[in-house]
Amino acid sequence: MTQDELKQAVAQAAADYVATNVPEGSIVGVGTGSTANFFIDALAPLKHRFKGAVASSEATRKRLEGHGIAVLDLNEVDTIPVYVDGADEIDAGLNMIKGGGGALTREKIVAAVAQTFVCICDASKLVNVMGTFPLPVEVIPMARAHVARELQKLGGTPVLREGFVTDNGNLILDVRGLSITDPKGLEAQINQITGVVTNGLFAIRPANVLLLGTPEGVRRLP
Ligand code: 5RP
Image 1 (cartoon, rainbow, N blue to C red):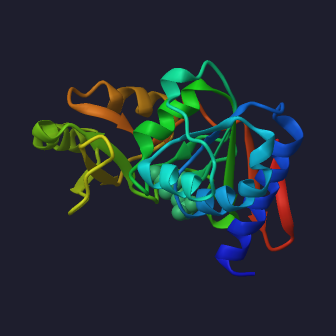
Image 2 (image 1 turned 180 degrees about the horizontal axis):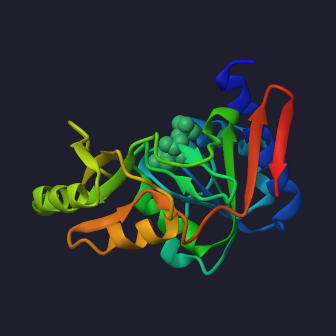
């Protein structure tokens, strides 16, 4: 199976999860990226079953609307039963690195509101220790150099994502070389640096369910 076929299989499994677990008339939270795009396509035939979606990026909003799915402002929504999104890396504790697509801040906000975070990944994303994928950090533009220096003090090598501006008008530093043995602690520590909007570690609020696409089929953890 190709990586895209694995992504499609987990996306369909996530749509089945939504159909089974989300009460009719609810709001679905929708992530960003190529796996999330397959999920949006798989969700479209079910659109009559839910009230609408909250999008974690402008790209996702456009794709949802392209399928005729209503996109709601998060501020108009009290509760999101399920948020479905991909990840760049995930460990056995369902801690993740996200933000390869640069949507980490809105993803983290939607995840904070969601009751259940369903992560959808192909098998290549499951790792023992995170950190091979560079950790994205969203920064306020005037703080870029300051934040880069602070990240170096933590042992990282930050590189500006060239030509990229987030949906929030900010920049991304991609940080290599961090030792991520304490994902929760590192997430909190980086978020304390003045000028950081948020970083791509999702450990304080990890996923609740992982649907993993493998050549043998979709595995569910736990
Ligand atoms: C975007 C993300 C994505 O979920 C992550 O980059 C995975 O993307 P893909 O499904 O394309 O591999 O965090 O900000």
